[in-house]
Length: 233
Image (cartoon, rainbow, N blue to C red; front, side, top):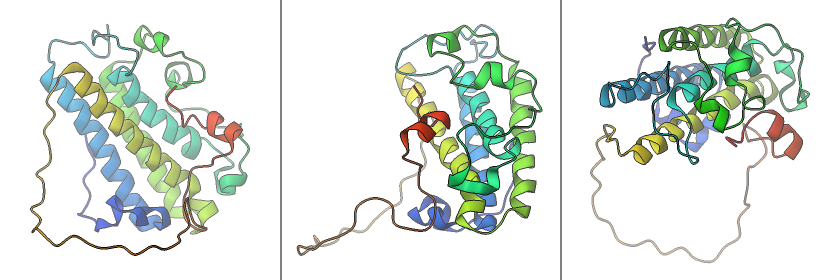
């Protein structure tokens, strides 16, 4: 199911991703989608007796979200703000409620829009089966990559592609939180070995805090942030 991609530069996992162009973004989006699907596979492997997409038997906890809902939301968010958003080219100037095309998944809004579904409801909601959700993630990624090829190479033109990437990274963190809450041991990446070094003395200085001009940063306008579903609520 995961889409293969060539190894990318360290930029994908660095702060420089804020200024990523379309080529790097495409690799990062593929990498993030692969990670989402691999994390779901880890849940299926470690808890094989749980029918995730049917009865959502994962113990309900207020601090976490159902893994199948999180997986579907990843695809929904990307499709909502990229594939369906006819005003994505406006970037930060895009209205909080843009003009939308229909979803390729008829149940997408009803199932995965967090503005329509409270946290408790996400545990009991009847969702599409897991195979359908995985296909949805593949189709939405393909659509996103096609649109990215045609997007303007500007901060405005790439804003929603960068936003979708940041959101998927957020949800990847939530998958790990969920695993920790359930006491599951996800495979941990090997830590790089670093040689010991002398302590660094940093003299007093001044610096700018927060995002600098240029590149991607979350829209901190409260109304826009809430509308764009950046809060897991």
